Image (cartoon, rainbow, N blue to C red; front, side, top):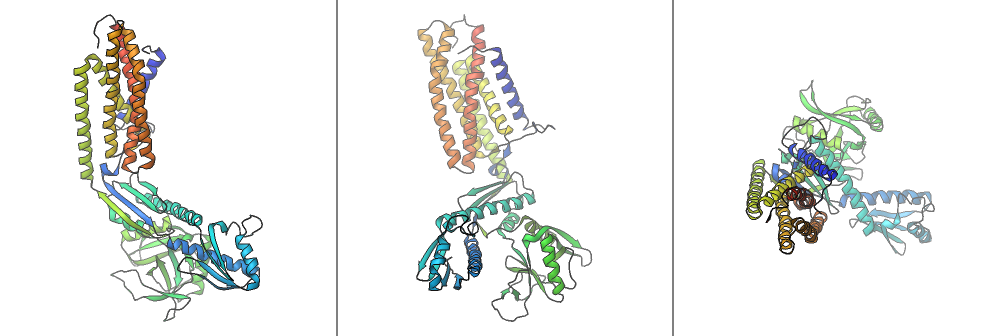
Length: 522
């Protein structure tokens, strides 16, 4: 147990040096990408914003049902089955009537789940819907499974859009995570302007180009929309056609610019091939008409078309400041959210508070570390010094591993490191006390030390394995700061076992071999 081959000795030394080097890289700067790694500070240590967003999936469900209703209408038209009173109700149900002679064929289509037989199988998977038949009236609504699929798809898409918007701002190490079926957690360490990110993430950014209607009253084909409130250029609501000429999906790029002619800030945009064709056709046939640029149900501006725009590019005006133009361009580039999102929880941590947390955490670590070192020296003398050396290297190994993976350190993570210090000493205490017991029955000190290490192994491993199980459970069931605590604790368990059974045991073995003839070594 106490014997170390030359290969093992070299391996222990190399591992200790390498991870100690990674630890030191937090305080120095290297040009090499491998060693230019650092531990990232979490939101509670460097300050920033914490936002919990909730997706309103009702519009997504309604839109899905409307698409399916159109699909049904087209399919049954091909089959010469006439649908009556086809509509999507407020209860999120598609309902329609058919002739009594067509009930059987209609029902067969809706319940047919075999791919290849039903030509609309991929577009209209009926196991995602519950079907109710009363006489000749059909009602379809999303099943529980279909609703889960839709929400998951909406959530995945929303996370991607949120990530694009956050990346555009250039925040440091953002943390964007799923929370359940309809929530997104956004942590933005070091963010200086939390209000700006709230405004950006709270906007759906659905852009549409639609003609202003000449009608003075609301009809089936138009709706009354207000202008986005702008103190410099506020107009009364106008009726706008529901027909969308072009949407934000056709945008390739959008950038803020200063118009040299009017000296106003505008947002210039570039369209893809399909968008350019549609926009060119609309502006060619619509010269003299007002074209409303609608964002999230409000009109940004409604310029009069003077000439045909066939170049595939244009600009949006609206009395923007450079900041609002920059944010609008960002929203358009990142794409529209699949559904509106609401901020249901928010916290902002100032950098001063984070700095105080770091100082408090380091002070607690320093005090605990000093007391442990003092106790071990007083209790075990030279072996206390060996345990303290292993303890220092244990901390260097722990921080080195966290640095290698560029982990994010939080205040609970510091607590995990402090707990690791106590656990590392606890293992050495168990071993040394067991050696003392063995020396009462064994005069040969080498055998007493070897037996002590062997017999204490079970107790040390049991204690650390049970703690590791708790850390794993915390990691998978916890969130945010709890995960930070479990990560440092879990990594600390492995570094503790390495420092106890390789570093401390190696130093003990070397000392024992040189002083095996002395009495009362411990």
